[in-house]
Image (tube, rainbow, N blue to C red; front, top):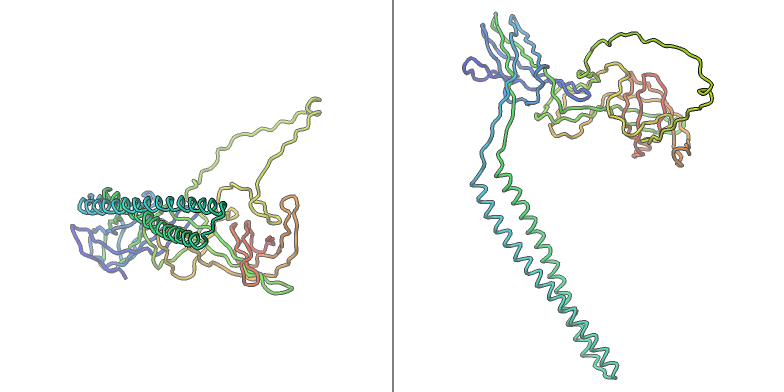
Length: 414
């Protein structure tokens, strides 16, 4: 349970961790709350170091307790700029000069080794030419020729090994120079830190223990439905369907041990009534010239997925298809999601159904034969459109997509 901290200049700093997050199609609603002991009178409560991405106009608050009133809510943004680090920059500059000297020396040794190898290759060629010339005149010095060639080959092998070692040494030295240069550049750049503070002005008529909450929207958080279909058993085959919610967040603060919900609500869409105007339709007979003309139009469209009954055009904007009705799913148990921008999946529901399998070929799309399963959505929730991971006989069988499928509706997978 959060405890009340020091009170300075009439401001009470409270610890209000993130309690609940509802992730929507392109943003998230975050709720922070804390329990504090408040005395009678007007007070100002503050939560420090929250993400600066809070959308100002979405900030809401709630005060629960014996007898109190929430008067005002505000967001205060702050930032600091750290000065450059000249001492570290000087040290890195010295290291960079030493690394460049080492790289230059290694490059010089490599050039000498390569030149020596070229001289040995020329010497070997001259030796072979001499052997051919002497052998053509009928001279035979087999032992001398063999020893001379063996000596040259040993020297060439040693030269190749030395060149390989020096090449690695040059590459390591150049890579070290690049790393030091990057660190030196970072030491020259000032670093900035941004954060926001949430404040709440309250009027307390009766002292006691109160619960204060802040609710707001933040960008840089999205979720998408994903599924897994596991086909097992002989005739009749059973299909186990598992629905997941996959969330990504880069809000700048971690969500530790929170209640997580997935919603298809779109708060960015305004609820405005359309303008009503007369739309008059007129009929007229076609002329003789129009009757002689037949209009034919064609359109090429790339298909992403080869699934019987499902055709998804490439280039379609991603989103959450909820069938026109706002739906919400709860993740089981408290979860923790770091602010790393990576995908984190949580199981939302699961059901089993009987599947009928057959083979289908659509030669106008692809010459491959597709195994198709037809089944019903026997779960309590609709299946939201999204990718499906296919599992057969406890092994990965491929990926597919499923459209929006209502509860009880039959659908096919390829």
